[in-house]
Image (cartoon, rainbow over all chains, first blue to last red; front, side):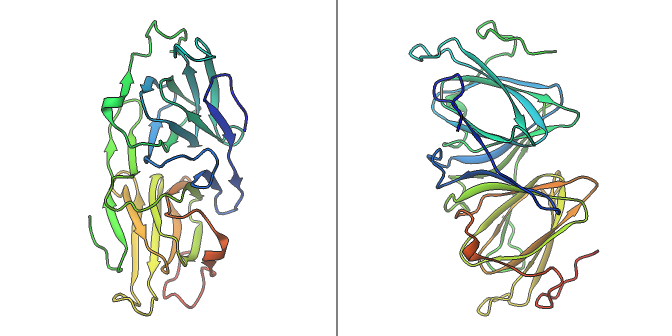
Length: 151
Length: 151
């Protein structure tokens, strides 16, 4: 498990099990040290070049992996009491070299950009089911976050 | 929820939420009536024309959906005390018309064949994490099951 530059964010490499009929891709088990609670599992497809940003959850922890295609994930920390307040974190998620589980705790801003030539699939297994009342969105051009998504 | 022809198997249509940047695909929530326990979430890719069969679990219930591509799922019931003993069930899983959650209880034989021109992705959210000791495999040509996979 590597500790990236934002407090509370975890990145953990995931196993890809070779099989000539098609690979098997691990994501999250109930006996994994990073597992806390199961809220939901769902998928978000993202078209090449499209940006889904910015989003923040007040209570929900995200557990993400990208089994199809690849994306650029960007996270921004503006939590007043965080040791990494003001830090921006960017990484690639996707096979074969970046098939990782990434855990994003509440109150961080995050967004995605689809890479490559085909849609990517983001799998999410948060600790609580989706509740619109605890999720916030701001426009991707928001001045609140010191990052410019490519057009 | 439709009740297919094998006792204990459930099929439930899943929501696909339109979004011009890429759709959102539901799979399973902890407040869904069919949800019992979270064991694991993982993915199995299957190449076009490839067959992954047959498999049976002694204790684990499978919860499957196919967010990418499409597959033919075949289930065979040889449980001695089942009201549907001897029944074979076949269905297509995949978007946009067959994006369903399918629940397969223990002791049923099941297998998949990849359809279409690109690999399909089977997502599975069983009620227990994978344990090789409770899972059995027999060759896809086995005479035990009255079904012939296309070559």
